[in-house]
Image (cartoon, rainbow, N blue to C red; front, side, top):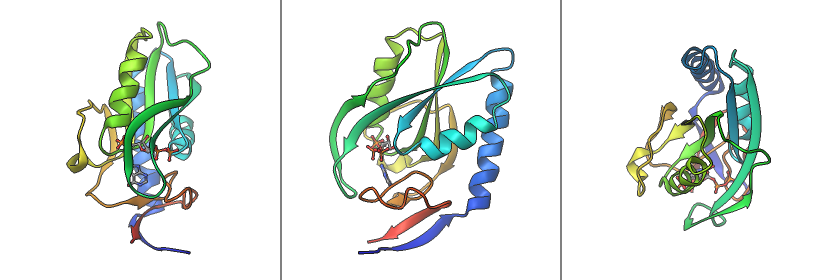
Length: 173
Ligand SMILES: O=P(O)(O)OC[C@H]1O[C@H](OP(=O)(O)OP(=O)(O)O)[C@H](O)[C@@H]1O
Ligand code: HPA
């Protein structure tokens, strides 16, 4: 069954914001290399677009955690489904997320990654829903703060669908 999706953040606005984040990260890491960690699956689109706009040298790695059941409800349990391929020691690491909601996934993930002794560890998210926070996390780069609505598109899914929408939309449930 197809849900009704309304546009929350149009494609051009998302593009402009990613451009701005890319400029900011490039300036903040001038003279260094950055190691981007894409948290699958949701942040794949954002990671690709952001990486293209960063002008300092970039390396990439991928990780997958599961925190959600099917649909819109969090299970509250985070587990690593796929770990990184490379060590983080001595690297300037930026974790790239599509959304921070309860903060459970990221607080768990950051703790694990910090223990691997990166030279620095930052967090960049396209979307942040601060009203939903259960676990506090320090976010270094935020695209958009949004209200408590279930969003899809730009990597975000509803029951694995709608990730490929080029804008951020709201599911009318
Ligand atoms: O702040 P939280 O409440 O923990 O929610 C945020 C997490 O939930 C989503 O991932 P999801 O587990 O849905 O996996 P996916 O990226 O494969 O869709 C999103 O990509 C974050 O990783
Ligand atoms: O609003 C959301 N949409 C899709 N996936 C999510 N994971 C956490 N919050 C969301």
